[in-house]
Length: 114
Length: 115
Image (cartoon, rainbow over all chains, first blue to last red; front, side, top):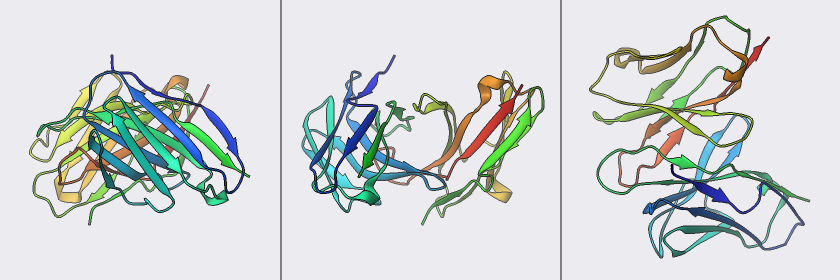
């Protein structure tokens, strides 16, 4: 079974702090994704990576950056956390190639910025 | 631009009732793929189904069934004889027409099944 793990289920940070959210998958997937989930808005894509050191902006990249130094690990970075970044963050991965594959999701990190 | 709309934000039913979750999508692509995911209280989204635009046959899997209608751009999901364990948030999603399996999600429908 594909396993996607996220470093924390709950996180509380202060405004202005640098925040790292870590995601690890164990199925050798090339594609990895970071989403934020807010009530009524569904999941919105922040960043996407299709290979090590490769990344693309999603729909709402402002205030975020990412790092993909190893294939299995995809990190989301909030350079200076703000209260409007309080949200649920979900990581996902999927196989590469031209086929259409479902994404496999981690359990999420609920981040509160005070 | 692509868009997925789930007009029902919350639905509450009593156990054993049938319930239909609506999904309407917008796309200019002639070939596209639609998905349904379930998010139980644990938080992890679980894949339920994938359907491509060339296959308009309805699908049934146990108590779950899906009705895909290109004419109305809808991909509705019905749970028959609902159970408390069906309580979750359900998301409909549309694959974007580019590489990498990126998805556009609807806003989700929270289903509450009461005993």
